[in-house]
Length: 202
Image (cartoon, rainbow, N blue to C red; front, side):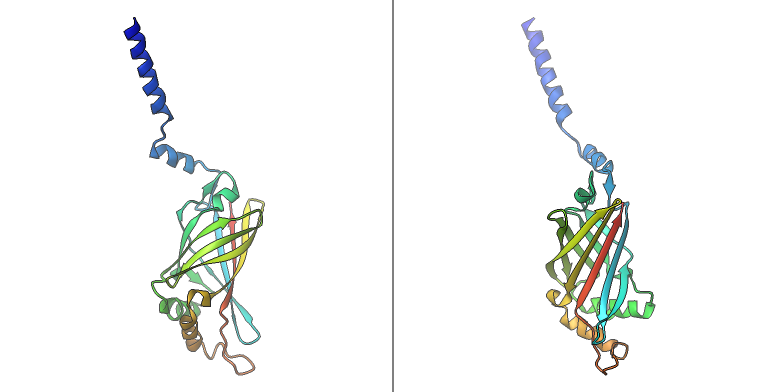
C-alpha cells in the first residue's frame, strides 16, 4: 500500500511540474491575445524637413514600418515600450516622386548601409520617452514627448541629422537640390534638423 501511495505522489508531482511549464506556442498565443498590437494598428510616420534661410517646412512620410520585436501589450504603454522597428527608406513619400528619388539616392544613398532605419522605443514616464535610432552606422537617442487619448499614441520629437554623422549626405542632397533650395536671399539652404510626428491608432 505504501508503494502505491508513493507512486501516486511521484506521478502527481511530475504532472504538476509539467502543467506549470509554458511551451513556446503557449507564449506566442499569449502575445497574440494581447489587447494592443502595433502591427495591427494604423501607424502614421510623418517627418518635416526645412529649406531656405527662412526655414520653410517640407513634409513627408514613411509608408511602411516593420515591427521586429515587441509591439504587444495589455495597455498602450506596454505595447509601445521596448518595441523594436525597422523602416525601409524606399517607403518615403513626399507627394513628389522626383523629390522622393533624390532623398533616397543623394541623402540615404550616401550613408553607410542605410536601406533601413531601425530603432527601439522606450517609455520613461506618463509623458516622455526616447527612441534609439540607428542610421549611417550610428545609434543615437532621440527624446520624445507623447500623449495617449482615444486609443491613440501620439509622439513628437526633433532630431539633428549631424548627430548621425550625416553632414556629407546633407551636403549631397543640398547640391542636387541647389536651385530648388535657393530662397529669395539667393542662398541655397537645407537644414539639418528634422521634426518627427508619429501616431499609432489602435
